[in-house]
Length: 166
Image (cartoon, rainbow, N blue to C red):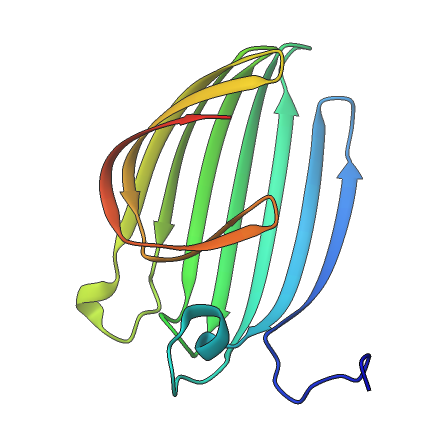
């Protein structure tokens, strides 16, 4: 009885990832995720349908030298529920072992409400010393669930600067 599966899905995902090194300077990570989550349980949105989404991510890194690299990440999210289809692009330049600079855009191109087809631009830079990292970010944060390192939380929409110390 204790190990029996319940009838309500909280969260389910199937992830397939491929890592590929094309040559000594270029590597890529290709990921496909099929996900379902329960908005009632996860977000407290009573009466909303479960979100069924497909997500594709292409993450490419090109090393110019042993200390300088450019990483690009392209993401697509397709769903009929919630806020519909999204695309995201990130470019990150790293000067090892300490500095990084990045720009990103998330675009809600598939929203049924045209006025909500918004861009969420951000720019950031940071410095890492041993195991400590400080980052300064400016931009627009969309409202929703944000997951970092396996920890997910609901965040409000916001504009402005943030400083992160980790």
